[in-house]
Length: 569
Image (tube, rainbow, N blue to C red; front, side, top):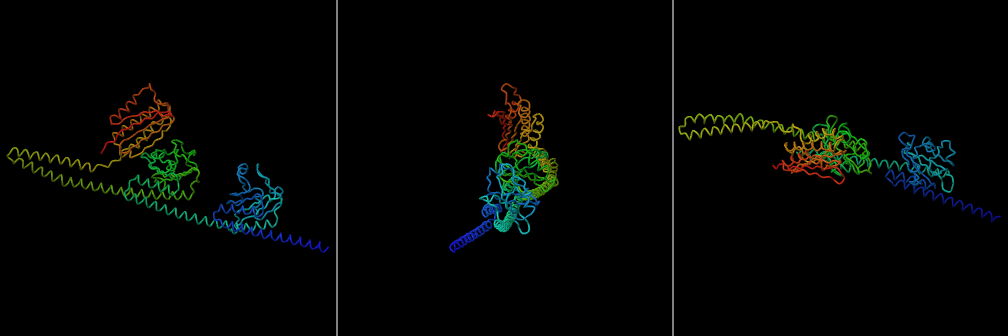
């Protein structure tokens, strides 16, 4: 009997030692879990680490952390482990906070169940959901506010969650609340740092643009600078700047930098069916999550390959003061533009508009000073030079009557005639000084757009238009008239004979020649058809020292290329 009692005492002692060892190991695991959770600073990593640690501590097969939304009654995020990606896809939408999960949200206290289905709040499981019986839920608090809940199900070995599991998990939840708050504070600090750096970059970019404009840089250089800095600020793949044409009904993309910039540069865009046009018309930012498949944006011409999120912001300070539009776009797989980024780009565009206005005012003041100086010179020439020359001529004419030598008298009269001719030349120069500066007439760019608009009803569709180079500056009037005539004839031919549903007009000026290219996807040029229109276009080119080329691409349609050299100065 004493030996049996001794054996019983030894067994009891061994059991207590095992229990103490198990408690020690569990406490050690809990401390390791608390340290592991506290090491992370990225919020997503912190949440994932909490879920993994919770599942390991209570030996649960499935675990999840549900983040409570702003309304306080549903889940805004759900972080599960134990289920595969395929299972998640088959189940469908993540839980929103109904049933047992909602019970822990409504009553933020620990909840331990032997079987989920036996609770009155049980909501059931969707199809393809793995079976779950035992359950343990614990709230995670940050100070006095509930951030979310830990959900554990299916304790391994078919066991139930006990009081010790609940205590361990509640302790982990306290450490998790501290770790989440630290991660949030760290994220806030990083966000503020990024905003400060972004604002600093924006201010530097605006200062650079202002200095460039005020220093008298060319308008094209300033727009190039705006596009480059906008692309850098927004970390985008593409940036483009469009300015309105004289008629105010279209925009032309003057500068594009970045991914596939060639597809945008020079395009003439209507105010409808384009992101830039919508931003210009509304005088407000317009964003798209997927610019390639946005129903508001016309697919032709194709110009957004590989791009997804896009944002167009007017360059101006308000409605009625929009000077242009800046567009930025990111790759398809990247996230969209946040409200803060939109606000930053708006501020950048507004400052750029102010810089452009200051530069224009300075140029206006310089122009006024030049005109005033020219007017003063003209007045001085009229009041001083002409009067003195006229008086000299009168004196010589009077003196000529007193000269008896015929040849000498004739020379004096010739000098008087030369003086009269000089007066006429000076008067012509005075008139030239007082002539209003050029620019009142429509330029070639506006005339091309107007011609395309006039031919659109006959075509049944709107051709895409692209113009590159100094179209209004380098092309003289006589060549511009021929360009417009050839364009009108080419579009009329497409409307009458091509049976096309798409056409493209490209006008380029490279400083040496002007090239007009008109292409369509129609039936091509018939070999036995009338060619009077083509002959007229060819003659127009030959008269100016150029030539006309016709071709049929492999994919169908026809391409007309009309080239004329520019006069050398």
